[in-house]
Amino acid sequence: MATRRAGQRTLVGRIDPDVLAFTVGRDPVTDLELVEADCLGSAAHATMLSRLPVRPRILGARDCRRVILELRRLMDLAGRGGFRITDEDQDVHLAVERMLTARLGDVGRRIHTGRSRNDQVAVDLRLYAREQLFGLTGETLDLAEVLLAQARRHRLVPMVGRTHLQPAMPSSVGVWASAHAESLLDDMYLLKAALDYNDACPLGSAAGYGVPLPIDRRLTARLLGFREPIHNVLYASNARGKCESVILSAATQVMLSLSRLSEDLILYSMPEFGYFRLPPAYCTGSSIMPQKYNPDVLELVRAKARRVAALTAGVTAIVNGLPGGYNRDLQETKESFVDGLKTTRLSVRILARLCRAVAVDPRALRAGFSAGVFATDRALELVREGMPFRDAYQHVRGHLEELQAADPDRALRAKTHDGAPMGLDFRAYARRVQAGRRWVKAEQRRCHAALSRLLGTRYPRPVAGKERGA
Ligand code: ARG
Image (tube, rainbow, N blue to C red; front, side):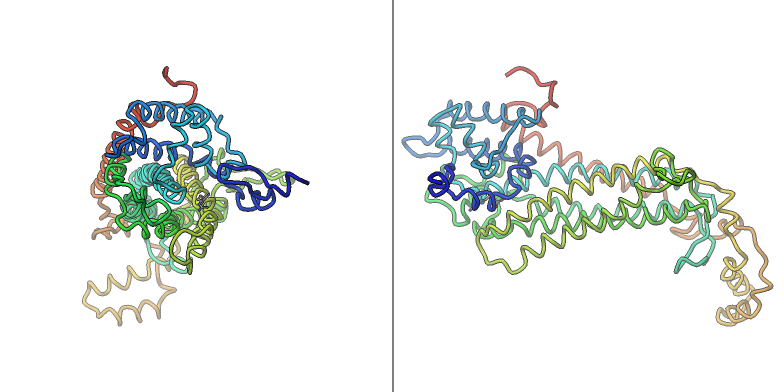
């Protein structure tokens, strides 16, 4: 009872255990995603503190080196899955401070000089988002490439083009597959914009109002590989949540592309169509119906697309109407943010593997052509003979029964303009993929070089089990 009344001891005072549990929420788990980012932010902050022109020094150069070595150790510990955040820590920021203090004593107790958890979490999320966006960009390009390879391979295979899902006009597997690829290539604009939006450093804004110390925010931004610091200290705080909402919106657009692709694949691999055969490894059976062969992966991607959209809406809703300055509400956006990004990357990756193994059945695709599919082509033939289009349209409409099941291959060959079955510019597609790859590689190299310099060792850190000495 006594301890209950006194509350649980934390680094920032005693807190009633129930209140602590409620306010901490799922942070001890969610924040495990941010350990690496938090250590990077602390390394930049410590470096900056050690260069501050104040006497006595807040942190000496030697102290700074010890802090960074310790932070590297913590990053490796996290990489091995050994980092723990307790309820008393509340979050990753105080957990790291506790561990630094346990190993370095006074030096650890000085690390929080001139910063707040508010700017720490904001910078952590941006560092985390940056890595996730690098990964997602590369994976999105991978999927686009897989689809383009399928489009190329089957560019001459006829496929009924549909509107309202009804047979409409002759088209090709090439058009179908590269349409999905082009959607992803357009999503690259949003991923790029999201990375740009994210590329400013909130560190040093502290609680949202700066500190009465001559801290160097340009230095910390540079050390972490950001373009610049977010200028206004209050805006640096207000941007939290909104930045996540922007990034998740870009992810939602990628998921929208995936959901349409998934739905098409589910539909056209149904036995009634049989255009595509899904790789058996990506389907599951039924526990009761022996013949079943279900497109579970695609259905789950479809559902996950809706879930990512919902997570985005959730983050946006939390930010909507918040007053300026830090509010604890923002903590509640973290889980959705992490979940949304992870879910998007998982979905893109699995679809790339599935699409690579999708088989195309040209016979079933050709069999799907009914005479009506050629109606518009027939009208345009009459136009070529001199008839005004509306007359040709009326004529064909009045004589639909006369339409012959024409040759789909011939129909494809007649469509040669830009973007049509015979006018697909695969070179231009390849150039877009290459430009995207070059760009993300350069960005990644720039950021990782900055972080490697900061840590005095290679970043990203070697994977667990393979680390070098020190
Ligand atoms: N866990 C907190 C969050 O995600 C960290 C910031 C806490 N700041 C505070 N003023 N209580 O928002």
